[in-house]
Amino acid sequence: MEDDAGYENYRVKDMSLAGEGHKLIRWAEEHMPVLMDIRKDFEKEKPLEGVAISCCLHVTKETAVLVKTLKAGGAEVALAGSNPLSTNDAVAAALAEDGIHVYAWRENHDDYYWCVNRVADYKPSITMDDGGDLVTTLHTTRRELLENVIAGTEETTTGVHRQRAMASQGKLEYPVVAVNDAMTKHFFDNRYGTGQSTIDGILRATSVLIAGKTFVVAGYGWCGRGLAMRARGMGANVIVCEVDEIKALEAVMDGFRVMPMEEAAKVGDIFVTVTGNKHVIDRNAIDAVKDGAIIANSGHFDNEINVPYIEEVATRAEKVRENVMEYWMKDGRKIYVLAEGRLVNLAAAEGHPSEVMDMSFANQALVAGWILREGKNLENKVYSVPEKIDREVAQEGNFLPWALK
Image (tube, rainbow, N blue to C red; front, side):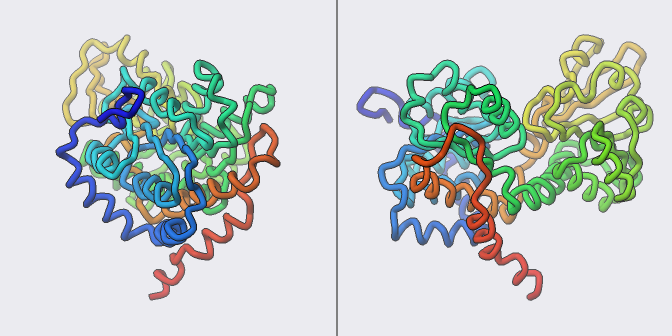
């Protein structure tokens, strides 16, 4: 299908998957009561009538619930994936069938930025980003579109860091609301969502036993805290690697061993990076890991593990399972890298559980309405989610009533 200008209205892998995608979306809707309540209000009030919203988000069943809610509010929504491996092709097909301009398919490494540019073509008034690639594209190669943008939202820590850096340098040309920093986002999505979904991704990729293994967590922010907690709950002996003295002390107080990565490399069985930094597992650590080590990443970008170095020094590489690459080192050791070093919880599993994404995406939907009301009063900087919205999401969350039943 094409629009009046001759552009495709969507591009997905296989429209025959739409039926399966609708079932997945329906399952997520059953477990996202806050966002579904917002959808009912949006359907009545149409607060986003005629507004173009371009999104660069992981194309999951939970994201589908968000974009369908935005559409119910009257918005014209265009969606690109925010990672080459995080798109669920069935969900993408279902969204296309429902009238969402979706440009996403799994393993779209070569066309990733084509998809980002395609959603920019819709001249958004609001952007929704996960990692900052859409915001960066608009500020670099698509600057002619900046005048249309009222404000944007950012879903993840990595993107917020990028946009705060742009603001401090005077280069951010429209306001951005850090949804990532909402209490109902990072307390729950980052901690409980990342903790569970990362373990899920590792298990789906490898089927290894976690109990009794030494599990190394690089980074003790909210994501690292959740992952360390869940790994310990699975019976692992957990080591935390953290360069921030206060966070390292917190990890010690929480009962974890803390040491530098180069020391942890000698004893770890499973390694996961969740820092947002580059080459957290670098040459020295790679040279030191023992035979059979499993290495994964749950940070936004795929540069936390120095995979190019592994590929350079390996004498042989073979895909031994879906999302598992086996590398043979010169000294006979084998190292296993999961999901190409990309987000293992999305590339090898389904991402965060619907219940925690319910809170994150409820913030996204309500902030979109707030931007339309308050955008003209905002400066070109990064804003926090208004406390009233944050608390409204928490109040509507239904989690405590479920726990008490």
